[in-house]
Length: 267
Image (cartoon, one colour):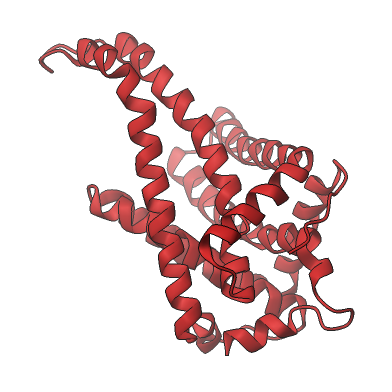
């Protein structure tokens, strides 16, 4: 798999292309954004098991998103029965399941690696749990959080393109992780712009909500306005995953046959 090296501005172009995909079928992608947000919310309230399930399911959810965006970009109407169609292939499903377990293992190991060096500070900050100083606890958690954030960037690079590479191309797990890492490294500056742009977009939405409350709107009404806006932003984020893959690996498809080989594998 040959990965292209793209210019810096591609990071913003991916977001624009994601917005165009969303505009083609906004109801379908809004539904998917709502469904995944609900899944994330439910998983987050279930201690340990919920979070682990969410992490392990991330590659499968990503692959479903990519397949939906590919269908939309090729002019196909997303019908309810089409969402789970990518998982009908037993081999693809097995590869994605293994990828999810590998992703979970990497995240767990990163959590241990980020926490163990600071375990003494964390224990001292918590003490017996009866009188915890929030400021001291925050200072103690800062080191593990920064360390985990750095490790998670590396994990994200390993797994970013892996769902498409394993699901569409049938590439083995280790090779898919290697190709994904190489592709992300070659396009580190576009991905930096991509990440910073999405961070700015989410901050702008939250700032807009705070501004509405500042001018006197009730918090409940502001939240009612922000919920659908956040779902739309998340849906556009999901749509932008597809161009990050196609712009980097699209040259591996024959001209005029973009995605057809992958579609055959899905079936």
